[in-house]
Image (cartoon, rainbow, N blue to C red; front, side, top):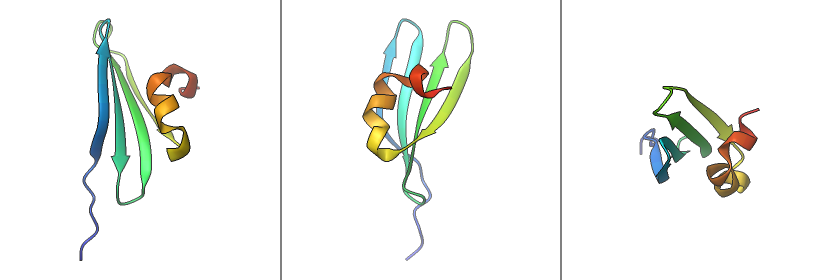
Amino acid sequence: MPAKTTTKELDRRYSNGVEVALLWHPASNGVAVTVTDWSTGDEFAVEVDPANALDAFHHPYAYAA
């Protein structure tokens, strides 16, 4: 059976022009959080330990460093 490579969106939220998404990569079992500030056009993504996924989703700027 071929490995699944599709990224799965686990959650997404939008507040004050900032969109945050929690993504899971089944092939690697990796988790990432993406942040897009629609008012400035700034965006970033950060890979996080799956154990910290929800914390990173709620506090993405703390994991951006």
